[in-house]
Image (cartoon, rainbow over all chains, first blue to last red; front, top):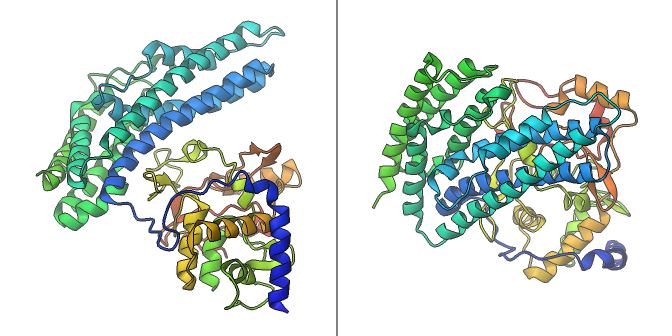
Length: 283
Length: 211
C-alpha cells in the first residue's frame, strides 16, 4: 500500500514539476560525500568572496534604487529605499576596503561618487515637484552602481588569480595582508563621508571587514599554534571593545585625537599577532 | 529522526512535527525520502523550497552584524561552506550548513545512511521536494500582527523584509545568519510556514530553546 501511494505521488511529481525541470541546473559535485568544511584555500578565498560579494550586493541595491526612480516611484518611497540601500552599500564597500588597499588592479569607487550618492540620499523634498531630487538620487545611485560593479568584478578577478596557489602560501599571504592593512592605519584615513557624520560607520566597517577572515581561518591557525590563536583572539577582542566603546555615535573622527591613537595601538597589536600567524605558514 | 527533522526545518519550516507514515526502508531513494517527509498526501514538512530559489543574493549582507557593533546584543554572521566552484554562503541547515539544496540533501542522506546515486537521482529528489514543499504566503494577517512581532524583538533575526520571486511576495522571516544564543551558532529558522511560531514565547536567553 505504501509503495503504491509513493508511486502515485512520484507520478504526480513528474507531472506537476515538469515546468520546473527546465530551470533546474544541477551543480557539479559528489552527491554522496559532501563535506561543508572549508579547505584552507577555501577559507582564505571566502574572505575575498565576502568582500567581492558585499560590493556586488551594494551594486544590486543601488540598481534597485535606480529602477525605482525610473519606474516613477514617489519621492518619499524612493528616498526611503535610497536610505535603506545606502546603509548596506557604505557598510559593505567599507568592509572591502582591505581588498582595495592590497589589490592594485581592483579599482575602488571614486570618492566623489560616494559623496554624491550620500548627498542625494540625504536630500529632502517637501514640495509637489520632486523631479530634481528624484533625478539626483537616480543619477547618483546609477553612477555608484556602475562603479561598484566594476569594483566587484575586479575583486572577483583577484579570487580567480589565487585559485592555483597552494594552501599554505594563501594562508600566509592573507594573514600578512590583514596585518599590513591593520598596521597601515588606512582604515582611519580618507574618510570622505565626514560631512554626513559617517566616520565611525566607515572606519568600523573597514576594520571588521578585515577581521572577518578570522572566522574562517582560525581553525587552521589554532591547529598549528594554539598560543598564536589565543593571542589573536585576545587582541581582536580588545580592538573590537575599543571600537564599540570609543566610536559608537561618533560622527567625525579627530585625526589628532586620542581615539585614533588608541585604535592604532590596538590594531597594531593585533597586526603583530597576525604576522606571527602568517609566519607559521610561510615556506 | 527528530534531530534530522529539526535540521531540515531550518531550510524551510516544518509544517508538521511527525510524518504521516513510518519510514520506508525500501523503494528508490525518492520514495524513501518522501516516506519520512510527507506529512499529508500533497505536502512535505519543509516549507518554501521553491521560494528559497528566489532569495536575493544580497539578502544576508543586508543584516549581518558579525561583531555586534550596534551593541543590540545580537551578532549575526554569514557562514561560508565548501562549494564546487569555491566557497559559498550557506542558507540551508540549522547548525549543519550548505549553500545548495543538493549539498544539504547529501548531508541529510548521509545522516540517514542513504546514498544518492548521481545527478539524476539528485534531480529527482529536488523535483519531488520542491513539488511537495508548501509555497508560503505572507505570514502576518494584519499590520498589527507584524507590529506586535517586531515589538517583541523577534524581527531582529526573523526579519520582516519581503522579496519578490516569480510574481509573488515572500517574507521568510529569517536573516539566514548564524547566531549564538548560548548553545553554539545556529542559523535563524525561517518562520514563513509556521503561523503558531509568530505568537509563541520567544527564545530563552540562556538556552536558546523556545519555551
